[in-house]
Length: 126
Image (cartoon, rainbow, N blue to C red; front, side, top):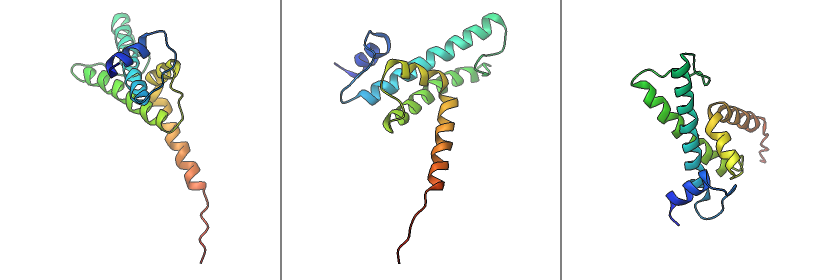
């Protein structure tokens, strides 16, 4: 089974989790797809109702297209890093979660990890 088929089956199929050699890549690409879908839904909602974006984004032409693409890319990169270091389980619900709120989660994770690293004490023996 190739990577595109496994991504589509994981993102839109009945399986809730995935395992295998490319599970991190599949998770990351699926999170990107969900991120793109979520930001597209926000775009359509804000343009249809003439209200502000729920995600507090600006969709002006041509920058709006870049915002949508960058949201998907950020979700994929955040999912890859988070799953790689064991923060996220490789499940569909985590994939949707990362795709939706990665700009909120990733900076907090990085801040908390930096705070924990700065509190570590290193003993130097002479």
